[in-house]
Structure formats: structure tokens, C-alpha cells
Length: 333
Image 1: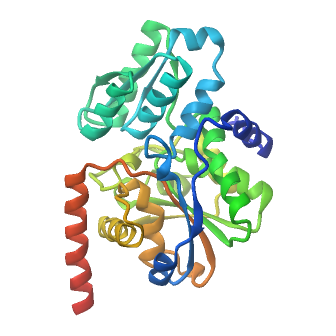
Image 2 (image 1 turned 90 degrees about the horizontal axis):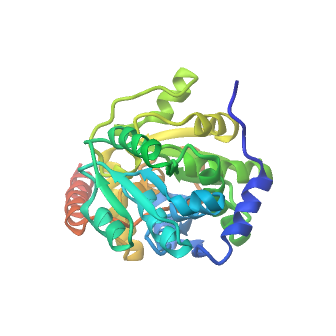
């Protein structure tokens, strides 16, 4: 049996629940990024959420959908970082105890912030999958509600509110380009866009080192894939979810991948154009536009989701140095 699909009404209800609880972030034409990409880039600056990531939308909405008994007992999640931050921040705001299980190699800045926000942080395993298995075991032992970072309908509906905001601010776009890890943001955004503007192309972008949705589309079902270290560590998911794959199959027009060099160059472009230190995952959609991975969008109005800025400063500095070297080599070649 195919998993159920969300409707526009589900995303509209999420928007109502989230009103006043998450920021309405800026959405505007970026002249400098547009010039570099050869298309009109409408940047959605959702890294300006309180915790530096779009993940707050789904996390808060999932918490608001819990029963009173579930809220009292608390929630648990596995996350490489931003979902954990969203739950920790909004759990504190809503009075819901939060436990987050993070891989031992999760960015230190994210683990530390979760702890500061009052969450109980458990470091377990070397991958998201290992952390997830442990989180499920703890949920069963302690009677905690498990909030999946992407394969959860309440989370997906919350992420879809990003699309409603952008359509209100910039209704005249030809395409929307979204980063993909597990596919929660892509699923929510695609649901809203295809209901309100079915003519708009919806395109997902994955790092080539973690191309789970591309593999699933090729296989016709979610499949486990090998992942390699990537600048887009927040997207390093080995297998897309059943719910997210169903939404992608129904509503998404295309999925492309970007290289590690593409990601580094996108971080540099965002830094130079807007003075922002995006994380690799947050710049993945932009990377596809700048690297020529979407030639069919030349000269078109393209909404690009910039989704996170929680990157270790030293890692960001190394990425910028790498990108400057790459740019010099490209200019000489």
C-alpha cells in the first residue's frame, strides 16, 4: 500500500499552527547570484530562523501535533544537528522535554547548542543510521514520542510552509530548487507548489556523496546507498523515507546532484554576495544553479532555498580557501 500524501490543506493548517512561532524570512532577488548563475535567483533566506535552519518549521509543527500526554513525557529524535536544534529550541519554548541522539562526529557547534537550549544530548554511533537505531530503542524504553527528522507527515507539512511564504512574497517564479537529505523539505515544498502553481518546476538537489533520492528514483523505491563524507553533512542520509519518496514521486519534476567542488564554490558565492556563512547543506540548491547543473533554467526566475548556516567556522574557512583555489584554476584553464 502506498503511503498517504499530504494535501495543500495540511500545509495551510501547519502555517496556521506555526503563526508567530517561526520567523517569516526574507525572500528577494539576488542580483549578484543571478549574474553568476545566468538565471534570476530569488533567494529564500531561511537560515535566518532563530536556530539558523529551516528545520524549525517541521520540528515545532510536530511538537504542536502531539497529545498532552506525549508532550508531558517528552520527545526524542536522531539528528545530525539542525533537526535536533529545532526540537531543542521549540521544546524549550513549548515546555516539552527533548532528547536528541547525534552521531559522535556531529558538528560540535550543533551538539553544544542543543545542550545549551536544554535538550538531553546523547552521542551515539558514527552515522545517522546508528544514532537513529539507538534513539528508537530509547523511545521504546522510556515511552518517548519519536519525531523523525524527515519521514513524518507533521514534519513534512511544517517544512511546506516555506513554500507558502515564498509564493506570497514572489508568486511569479518558473522553478523552485531545494536541497535534499531525507526529503522532508522537498516533499512539503512540492506539495504546496504543485497545488497552487502546478506549472512551476520543482527540483531537488543532493550531494553526489549522498544521493539517496536519485538512487530511489532509479530503483522505483527507497534503497540504501553508501554515503561519503561531504560538505553537506546535514544531507548525508543513506536512504530516503517511504513518505518522502511517495511525495517526490508524485510532485517532484527532477533531482540532480552536485560535487564537493560545486558546494565549496557555492559557499564562497553566498559569502561574497550576502556575507553569510552558509553550511554545505544550506548552499546545495544554490550550488546546482551556479555549477550549470540546471541548464534548462537559464534566464528564468528561480526560487532557491538557502536553508542553514550552522557550520564550524574553521570548516567554513577551509571551504572558502578551497573555492578560491578552484576559481583561480578555472580562470586559468
